[in-house]
Length: 87
Image 1: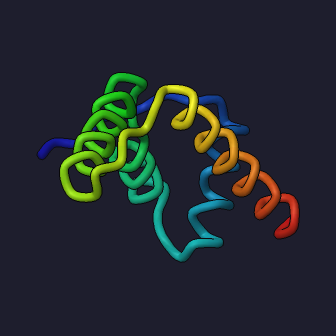
Image 2: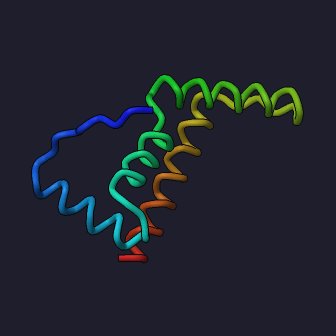
C-alpha cells in the first residue's frame, strides 16, 4: 500500500499529534484507526438492518424504527455523560 499526503491546517496537525502522543501512537495510526472505525450513514443503516434480522431470527424480537431510534438516543446520551464525566 502506498502512502498519500493529506493536507490539513497546522492547528489540526498539531492537535492530531497531541492526541496520538497521548495514546502512544502515531498520527498515521490515529488517522488509519479513525478511517477504519468510522461508518458512513449507509454502513450504519446496513448494520442496523443486520442487527434487526439477527434479533428476529435468533431471539424472535422485532425492533421497530421508533424503538431503534429511542435506543440510539439512549446510547448517545450515555456516551455523552461518560465523556462529560471524564472531562
